[in-house]
Length: 177
Length: 452
Image (cartoon, rainbow over all chains, first blue to last red):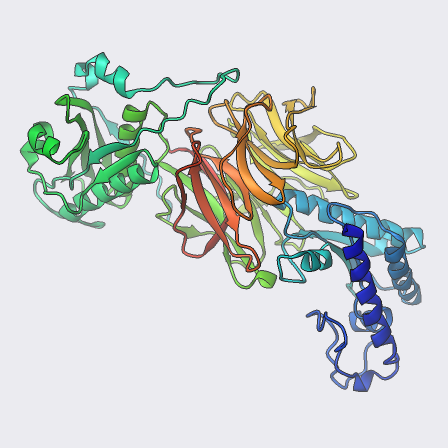
């Protein structure tokens, strides 16, 4: 049942990625409203189309390239393993990182609210490092990757239900510069 | 800005030498001190009817904290509230009962109070001295036996009048229940505001009853998991001040803080040893979290655990020889005990579900924890893992902390969906549960020892 949740999260992620990919990387000046056909909507830290060109190698460029939910991987309860779906996401991220070798990223590890505070900080560390190690295995210099755990302090989805918790058990890649 | 005034205990000439031991035996249950092999936890449940009229102010005078007559009533209010909140008393007054005359303080009208159907009576006075300090006298009587049970006096600066009230309530509570005192103590906790997705978390401190509240950090960076040092001079806590979770020692007098270790790795879950000389903390290295200890004066940290799983938290036994901690080395969060040098690590929780945030009682007889089996509940078990009892039943009760007497526990409760938090208190019967008054939401309470 946990796998089901995770599979669903990933499936929605694919829909979001596909929807965004359909926009085309070059048409930055006229992005349609984001992902109306998914249940996710705006994640709060996505690109706001402004009419200005997106700077290559920036966080905005990264999100454009990997897709709206392509900046993150999801985990099952208390787990931190990178499964095949996660690997696909991280491979896309690694391709972008290979294109911009001077960029650095922070991997944020998060947990859902159904864990105790200290344990969740430790769990977020594990998740961030699991993602980091996989990126490193794809050839990304690990000195370009720093990690930070937010435990359960920064939930993405605000409900107290399996769907929200599945979205919150995540490792998110953020471009630093 | 620091108030470093200590209460001067003022010994009356006639102390409780007069008290017949028969009365004491009747009102005093057995105190089980440091007896882990105890089969039953001896929990006091009798509720006593006690009258607390306003303290008399013989010649009322103004003080920086208000008129002494007003203070006399306020002190009685605090005593009454403390006793009621302990769950072991049913106080009357000061509102709704007649004021007493000064002569009554040493010569109570037992027949009148018998008519009010009370078993005990607290009387006292407040005097303003030439130096501006308050002298507070506090007398406890057994109404049915017509006997004085104890009397105490305190000299305090007017701004610390609540401490005299707490000391008086502590004396009454201890005398009548046989338990150690706990009212005159303080709490460090995290004050929370803002929506669930963008919570502002500030370090704050308050008295054990929620009074004298003070915010310490301004909320610009997230603060978590504070712990008062045993001497109340500093607070260990986690801050994201530099962007990463790191443990700082905050000095209350100077307002300055420092990192406990120069390591660039994230550190969290800070704890003090009972003597305040050692800091226990958890540190993640390349994703793997283990427990370390370091002298409060710095030096080299000692790594206590090395399992590939998450080893986190920890709490010293009161004698400082053992540490209870949590680990998922066996597949899920469970409670383990080890010697203070890291040797002899063994699992003690076996009840099913996950066990987290163990805290050793200051009395040594019990370990409190969060049990995760669907919902989060606070429970206690003996240090060998036996005698497990759950004390709360809510959606998410987390992170117990012990009152200095090891008979009351605070924890925080998270509300489903909204994420709103509040600090709660429960006694070992599990029956006397109440929410603490905090100006905003609250989490991560940490109870300090009885004030010196």
